[in-house]
Length: 339
Image (cartoon, rainbow, N blue to C red):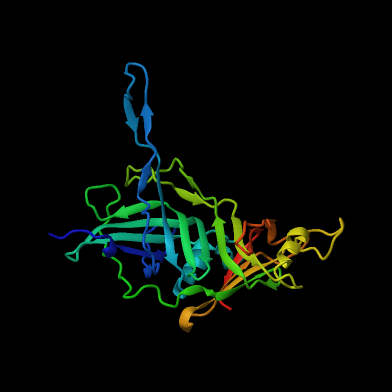
């Protein structure tokens, strides 16, 4: 008897040309990852307790449906940079259009008999919250904390959302290109390169709000959202730095930036200008170019770029030996490049 196993599952994505329609483009893997929380429908049931009933609910109505999932553990490879820049970190698009590019997510089981089971197409996908992070000695990770979708189609006939469709072609290998390692990078803050960074985390929150309008899709009885509206975009950067070198241009420059926030000196007349946090990494083995995250726009007193919210220089109990500072930045924008 054929049966389903987790390692045979298929998880693919493809950019959409029309928001909410199944993509006919090229489907790609996310690369190397262990898990996915599939964005299957969650229903907001509305129970009724009223007259001519008991203490138990008398009836219930199926309300709005939401499609939300996550992929928390993607190893970031050079072949995935297009997804990162277009579907996660959108400002690189330029111009007036800062809306996230939608994508279709394909999830299916492949049983031990080689048959595809429960194929699902989630359309209108947008990344609501995500982070890119790495710890010392490890590789960069893309963590999709929450992705939202407009609609779902599937291969189980006789149910709402059924679609008869050939399965997308599966790439023969994982996302092409080398992996980005923490040890193959550099971190600069306000023009100073810090050589003793132990961890970094870059996060984005798009504050997407699903909208349910009066107009309904007559082909299904499920109340999926009509649109996914991006709200205010919030960027955060956290960096852990070991404070060792007290010389000019050394680790204590982080303290100076905490106090002056990019100003040239002391005094009430000087105003905050902020600074850039630049994270640069090279792909292992030369398989793909470098990847760079520029956190913050052009520093100015009228529109400060990266500002340092906190960086406590606390002293741990011996024999820790070193002071590790967690610097938390609020940045106004992030762009992705391949220098």
